[in-house]
Length: 342
Image (tube, rainbow, N blue to C red):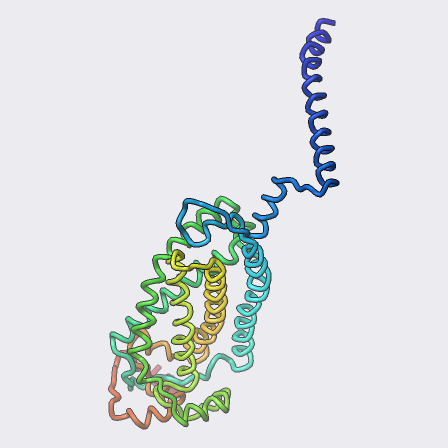
């Protein structure tokens, strides 16, 4: 009985507040309905409607777009970012990986050249090798961090959880922002330094028209048509990605927020297309033409490789070839001779 009295003492005073609040709500609804029937509008509704429609107001902040409380264009950007960009572009990457896999299956990953004789062709200077790996390593780092920022919410959160992704996203953003300018320098230097090697010739046109002949090894110079196309992709895609990337680091220069959003979309789309094409380059430099990676690591390559893959270069530079005993692989011993020796 005592407990009931205490509960009643606590609840009954509150019932008055509830009744008053309900009465106030009813009065506000009736007042709003009466105002609408007279053709009047609610000032709060008008304010919210103007904000949703991106009407300009007044602010003491002197910055582009600061006088717009809500930008409806942001929803359009979100739909593009979370729609076509996040839906279709990953399929491009998957397509390129699948294409390289099928190419490897059907071609066998490049022909075997036999035992090297030790005769080598000088190809790249130390400067060229350092420049190549400088750009390549930064490209991979920026690709990983950029893809993490673009697709990480869908792919990484289920794997490492929200807290893990939050830490990784912060690190990726920092690395991407600070690594970008160094990458810009590498792309500019590479475009200038290697331009004279990548001028197209009629031999390259024929090579491209025949698609490299898929294993028949058409005549090619130091750089074949495919490599020159890759260089052109690096120059054009690099220019777009680098310029848009620098602009993203300087958002204050955009007078219109829409321009910033378009710049961000262009940066991401071109970068992903570029990454997809790079899969073909990586494959051809490793599994597709075994031995060719020596050019970027040692600066020289075996004469057997040059004679098969770059026959025109072989004829032009055979006088420059040299012997390196450390690269020579002795032929296997004859079985009968081995038996006699035994």
